[in-house]
Every structure is written in C-alpha cells, then in structure tokens.
Image (cartoon, rainbow, N blue to C red; front, side, top):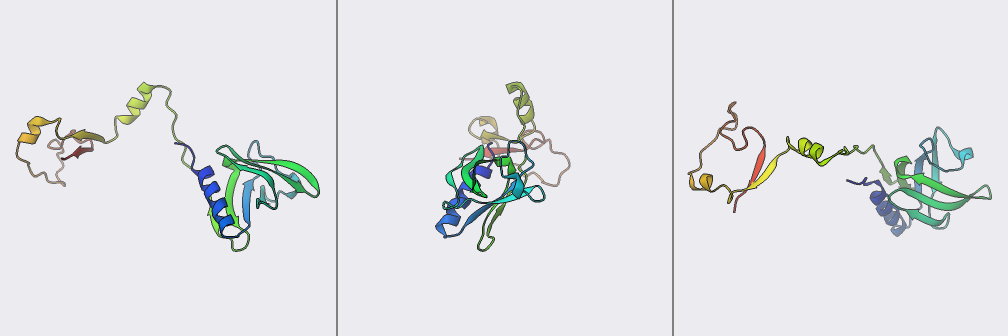
Length: 163
C-alpha cells in the first residue's frame, strides 16, 4: 500500500484553510533530499508557513511538498519529501496532526515469495463448494478444546460464506 501521509497532509491543509487557519508544517531538515533554508533550522527541524499568502505554486503530491518562497528576501524553491514531513498544524490554535512512522510494507521478490507469505493467512471459502459438509448436520465444537482437528483447515483460521 502507498503511504497515507500525503493524503492526510492534503486533507488537513484544505481543512485548515476552510477553517480560516494558517497551516504550518514541521520538517525534519536532516532527511535526504530536503531543501529548506538551513539558516532557520533549529534542532534538526524547521517550521514553515504554507498558507497561500506565504508561498507560491504549492504542490502536495505523493512524493513531496514543494513550493516557492522568500526567506530574508531571497527566493528559494523548497522541497520536503513526504518522509521528512513531521507535522501539519494551525498556527492559531495548534490543532493538526503529527505523523508517526508508518510500517514498511514488504516488497516480494516474486509471486512464489508472495504465495509463501500468504500461507499463514486466513482463507475465505464458499459453503456451496463443500457439498459433502453442507449435507451433514452441524456438530458443536468446543472452542477451548486443545485438539483443533475438528475445525476446517486443521488449525488454520478460515472464514466461510454462508448463504
């Protein structure tokens, strides 16, 4: 899955503007490919005003937040990769969101690796495809029973569609 950070950042930005707030972002200036005015970095971070009146050509895409701005009268193109975006909040009241670390999704080298990874996952099967079991009367299975051989899938969790 794609990271949710750019989607949340765009939504929060729009929400703050709709509520007449001034959106600020906190950036980890030490991350690779971050382009911010280094003279304003404190403790490895920088806070930037991204309100429409403060920036030009703002873009919050899936890869980065980019915009043009002036710092001490000097124009600069600012680039904040999504993994360097720490928070977005309103200057007026501090309401916003701090982004945590998102789990890294494994990338499978092949379909075989993906199939091996899926072996331990629950499965979904239709009751109609199991005609023998559908004609048998249902048996009560004690959930606390140590022997799970009476369950379908022999201990492997499964779901069945009952129509």
